[in-house]
Image (cartoon, rainbow, N blue to C red; front, top):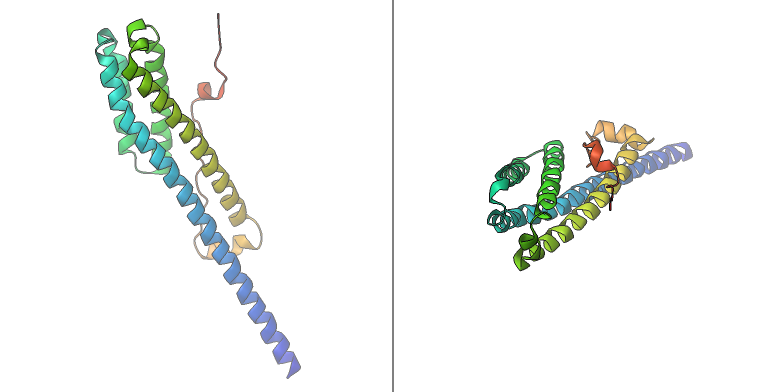
Length: 184
């Protein structure tokens, strides 16, 4: 009779351990989803600022139409992206075109002094910083989640219940990884 109670106790402990691991994996997956939604909020803000920035620049940069059109096109691609992988690629392209716009804007003293343009640039810079922090937080959560579903004994439970690794939000453009050169 005592052996039966010991076996029953071991089974109960095992079941409780499985429940605990499953619940922690669910919590981590939800944290990754929450972190992504924080990035999404900042990307939405960025997408909302860009048309105002482009419209403000249009009057001063009439012959820079290609730059303005590429920013607008990149913004639309980013808005339309649906998967994380597509969004990462689209946002990297949008970042690149925004850099081009800011570089071109530097050549227009009247535009640089325009109060609306300065305010929009400041808001966009603040938003870019928030996106950067959100990306970092998201990648930290993805790292924690992915490590958890790949370690024993979590990996056996994760495999049984369909927990898949999450994708990191990483830079695809090698040029973005380099520090900018400052020349005087």
